Image (spheres, one colour):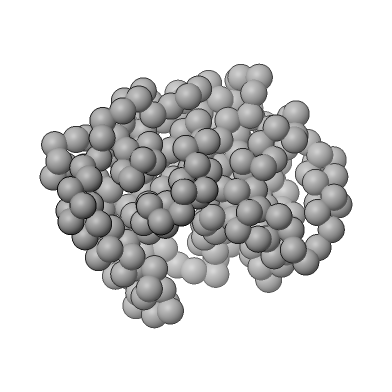
Length: 259
């Protein structure tokens, strides 16, 4: 599959929702565990400065570009990618899982937010079996549990026997955990890093209105609602294009998928 690479991190070009559904269907019908990540400009800046994190991202089978900045910078350098917000891509994955009555696990979150998201999904996708685990558990940047019983968490996941695991630990913890345990659960067909999506799915945070999303300025809405995100938004909206343009490191056209 064609795509581009920023700072050595490969991003896939998926032209349509139909194509994305097809890839997810292939993953769900396969025999191996497939990893999906959705790097945005903030994540790419971090990967530029953290070789290990870049390796985590490149270990994925499928890296969907999130964030308007990735699309814009690719366009400036005459490359083509399409933005796929992780929160939207994950919903397409769940729709395919629903048709097959599969089991889904949400890993991460605090204050019961993942459990609320799981309940909302159960109501939204009849036939889908959704569970949540790991509420309030802290993980290191290497994906290791630092204040809980890691063995118990792993055993609980195996007991739930999920087909899809959505990991909402935030970067780089979620990517590190996925790489560490991608082969630990025989039933799992897709592991996907979803960042803060649990907050939206669980009703704690309201997603930006469609108008903001269509213009590619969802970050303005986030900044208004959560001023503490300023440093993250600064990295995404200022540092990312600055690094790309200053270092003259255009997104390199590349084959991007291993699966």
